[in-house]
Length: 99
Image (cartoon, rainbow, N blue to C red; front, side, top):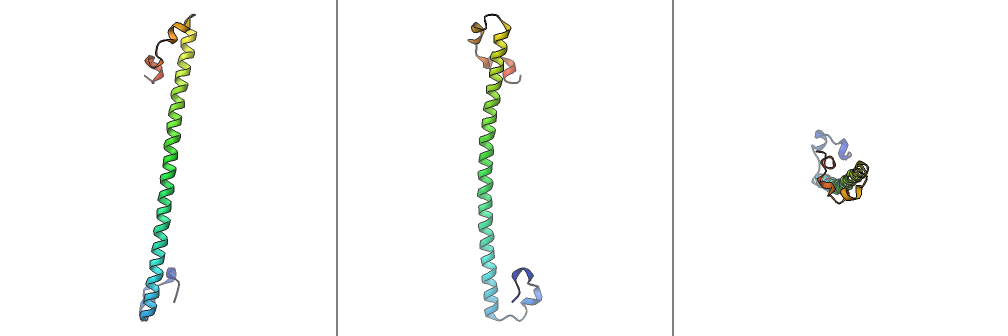
C-alpha cells in the first residue's frame, strides 16, 4: 500500500477490508498526531503572548518612571529651592502623562 501522502483516489479501488482498516488506522493516527501538534503550538503561542504582555507592562512601568524622573529633574532645575516643589505630586504635572 502506498504512503498516505502518495495515495490517490484510484488506489482505494479494490482494497481488501483489512487494507481499508489499516489505512483508516493510519489516517486516525495522523489526525491524532496533528491534533497534538496543534495543541502544543497553541500552548506555545499562549505562553509567548503572556511573555509579551509581561514585557509590555514592564516597558510601560519603565516609561512612566522615566517620565517621573525627568519631571523631578525639571522641577529641581526650575526653581532654586526645588525641594519645596517636589512635595507636589508629579502626577499633576501635565507633561508626565503626555498631555
